[in-house]
Image (tube, rainbow, N blue to C red; front, side, top):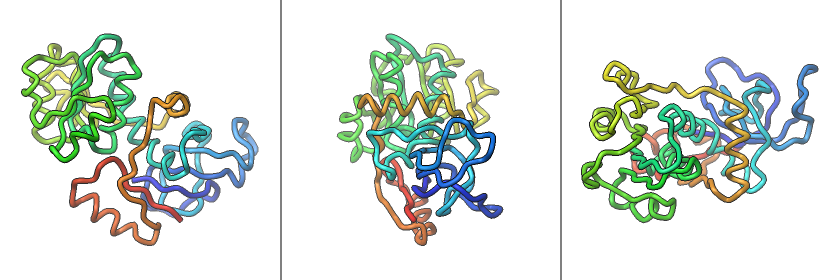
Length: 246
């Protein structure tokens, strides 16, 4: 869950959060890519704070077409989606299945797969989220077997039964990727542990500025209500992201 705040002082130990968007209020002597006043977004630790210290290589200029709240919803989950799809070799003409397609990483994966050239994107979600998936350009499914065909790529953001399903439903198990279940690797699939990468953030910002990537914010809550935000997430049925603001 991301936070929209301001970038600067190092957070105390154990401050949670991995995504943020804000304004640079100070920079180190060796920083060359940013100046005070820049609007940035980042995939960095300690994001549940009003001020955060961010490594230069973990940040990028904020997409101009997104608000701070929308931009704060992007970094970790969209990077996870991009890195998973690239690990599967997603490209022109592919048929892609996204497990958990209405969630944080899933709704980004639907859009990114299209940008990478996928011919069709199908996504599993609850029936209440099917219209949302159609708006994103995906064909909604409750169960992946509904399509009655093997897929070129399957990405798992849900875990549990979805990991095994991803392996079963692809032509080549090496193109089944999970960001949540390392056990997929033992069965011939790929596990991707998302990692900060400024070039990926710049790629995503360009996609957003071209109108090809949007962030769905399910709810915006003040930082003081972070515990309530986690209870909301744990209850399930969150479409897209929950964002904390100072």
